[in-house]
Image 1 (cartoon, rainbow, N blue to C red):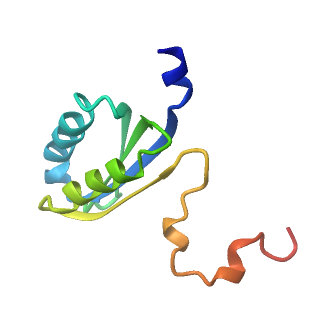
Image 2: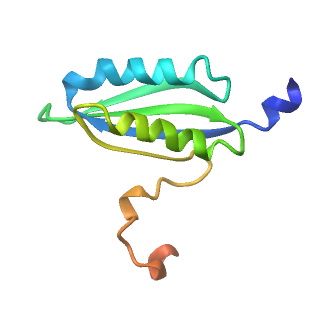
Image 3: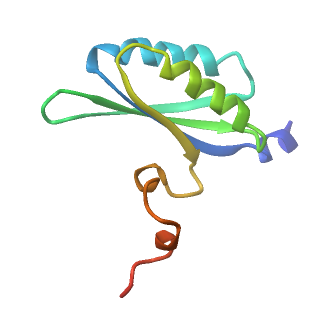
Length: 114
C-alpha cells in the first residue's frame, strides 16, 4: 500500500461554471472520484467573480502516473453538464498552462529581462 501511495501525484481540475450549476458540479466530482480508487478528491476551492456571473471550482486530486485517461474522461463528463463555461486539468507539480494555450511555442521560456 505504501508503494501505491508513492505513485500518486497531485493534479488540479479547474471548472468555470454558472453559480447555479456549482452544487451539481460538486456532486459529480464527489461521485466520480470517490469510489474509483484511481482518482482521489482531496479538496475543492471555490472562487466567485465579483459580478456574480461565474464560479471557478478548483478540485485538488491525487492520481496515479497513468491517470491521464481517467482525468480526460472526467473532463469529458463534466463538459457535458449544463452551465459549464470551461474545464481543464493539469499536474499540480507544473504550472497551469491553459491560459497560455494560444501563445506561440517560442514564448514558453521566461520573458526577456527576467
